[in-house]
Length: 108
Image: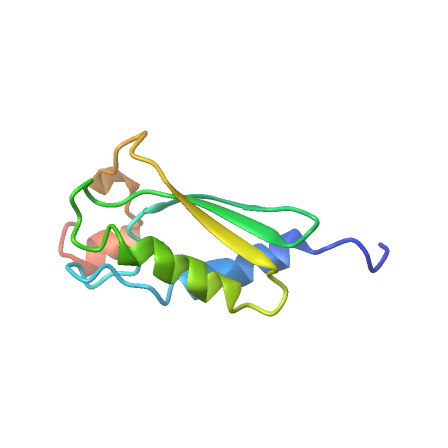
């Protein structure tokens, strides 16, 4: 393994850890456990693209939440740039929540 190869798995874990510090303001669960993060892509230039959704299109944090995700991910030393793309396809449902999130919200 040459030192030009990036460890995308390790960086992916770091990105997930950072994302888990961001909470939906209306639900006391982080956005990762809520299932709002659909995908995280990292290329060899350390550019990160995050595909995420919101609990609803008129979510009160529709403007601020993606920016918070971008800023926190950009704060990781290895990350050169981060971009968040919002999608509503497929629409979010509580089926996307982790067991941990469902337990936290009394849904299990």
